[in-house]
Length: 80
Image (cartoon, rainbow, N blue to C red):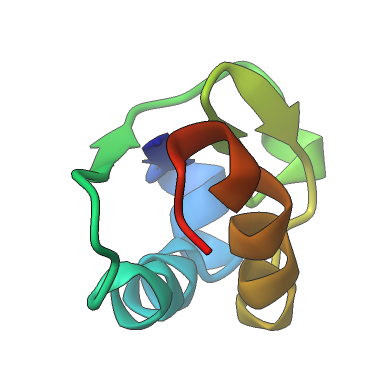
């Protein structure tokens, strides 16, 4: 699973750091390799925080959204 969180100015101000922290918490004990990264502006500044998971773009992501997003994508990387 590859997760990229936008840390551009707008997403940063809308809480990107808290979203990253929640992903680190949620993915910390995963039994497979998961790449968690940050990216600069993804061109959707009014819709931030923007998160891309395996190429699927999610808009207006909050820390509360992270567990359901991880669960949704777990099937694609063999995590149960």
